[in-house]
Length: 499
Ligand code: ADP
Ligand code: GLC
Image 1 (cartoon, rainbow, N blue to C red):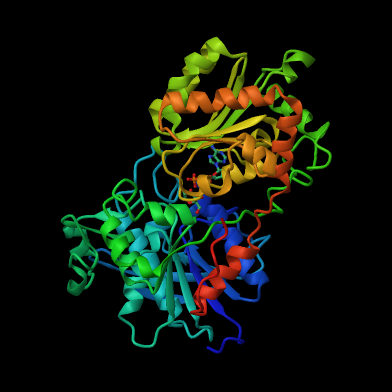
Image 2 (image 1 turned 45 degrees about the vertical axis):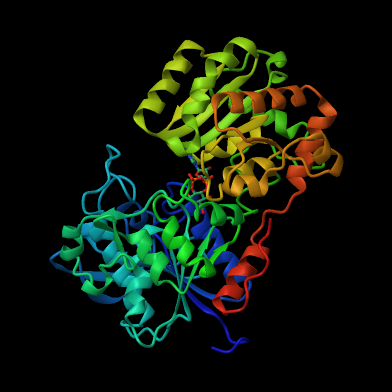
C-alpha cells in the first residue's frame, strides 16, 4: 500500500472492554483501535463470541462460515459482525459454541481453573483470524496489517508466515509471564507444522509456546512500555524467553500504552459521586472519599475524612506485590492512622487474607473481593494514594488512572511504572515533575519506606497538592503511541518512545 492510502488493520485479541475484560489488555484492546481509527485507520477487531459477549449484543449479522482445524477435529465456525454501543468500527466474533459458549471468564472456569482446552480454543481463534486476513469469506476487505496480542493470538503471525501474499504482522506482548505453554502432544493434536518444532521455532523446553510463536514469526514485536522492552531481554524478567528476545531485539519496540481519557475522566466519570478537575479538586475529590468510606461502612464523622485513605485495585496475584502489602499491614495498622480500601480478585489465599484482615479491623480496612467496574473508579477517585508495588509491570494502567484522578501512586521502579511515575524527591518536586512515590528495593521494607514518605508528604498540604496537580495535568492519551504504531505499520522508523 502507498503511504497515503488508508491503512486497514485487523486487530486480534481475546478480550475487549466493555464486552469482556479481565485486566488492562481489555482496556487497551478497546482504546488503541479507537485511537487508530481516529488517525484514519480502517479497523476491524476480532475476538471469540464468548457467551457473556453474545448476551450483551442486540444486533448481529452473520458474515459466513469457516471450517477450521481444532484439536484432532474440525469446527464449523460462524463469523458474526456487530457494532456494539460505543464502538466506531465493526467487531467480528468467532462463534464456535463448543469452545466459547460457556460460563466463567475467557480463560478460566468458575473455580478459577484454566479451561483444559485453552490451546484448542485459541488455536481456532488464531486460525479464524488468518482466514479473515485472507478474506476467505469474500467480504471484500483485506487488511494491510494484522495486529495480534498476547499468547492467545500468538499463532497468528506464525500461521500468516506460511502464506505467500500476506499482510504484515505485528505482535504485542502485554505480559510475558503468560506464555501459552502447551505439550508436544497438544502440538500434534493441533496439527501444527513440523517445521516449527525447533528451538528457533516455537518449541519451548520440550513443549511449545504460543507467545514465542508470536515473537519469532511476527514482522514486528512490540511491548507496552520502553522499560519493559529492555527488561524482558534479561534473565530476571525474560521468563525463559530472554534469549529469543535478544535475537530479535531489532524488531522489538517499547510503545507506552495510553489510557482512554474519556472513560477515565474525573470531570465526567458517571461512576463518581462528584466530579472534579486539576483546577477544582475540592469538594469533588473528598465527596468521593466520603462515598467510598460509606460504601465500606467506614465513615464515622468529618474527622475521618482527614485521615489518609490508601487504595488498591488489582488482580490479586504475586505480580502485583499483594503479598508485600499484606506483610506490611501489621506495621501500618500499628504505627500509622492510615485506612485502606482494596478491590480485587485472584488467588484464593490473598483473597482470604484480605477478608480476614477486614473482619478484624472493619473500621480501618474495606475489602471487596470480585470484579466491579464502579468500585474500581470510585477507589481511584476516593482514595488519597494508590498502591501498586508490582514486581514487574509491562505497562500498568491503574497508576495512570490514579494520576489522572489526583491519587498519587506508590510504585516499584519497574516496567511502565518506571516510565510514568516520578518520585517526589526534592529535585523532582522543584522541577515540577514529581507525581508519586517510587521505591527501588523490592521488599516489605522498601514498600514501607515509600508509604512512610507518602504519608509524610500527605501531611504537607501544599507539597501534596502540587503532586496531585502534576499528575492530573499530565497527558496520558493515545495520540503519540497511536502515531508510533501507525509508523510501525507503514514500515517507517518508529517514533521515539514516549518516556
Ligand atoms: P493488569 O492488566 O496487569 O491487570 P493494568 O493496570 O494494566 O493491570 O490494568 C488493570 C485493569 O483492570 C484496570 O482497568 C483496573 O481498573 C481493572 N481491574 C483490576 N482488578 C479489578 C477489579 N477487581 N474490579 C474492577 N476492575 C479491576
Ligand atoms: C497486561 C499487563 C499490564 C498492561 C496491560 C495492557 O495485563 O500486566 O501491565 O498494562 O497488559 O497492556
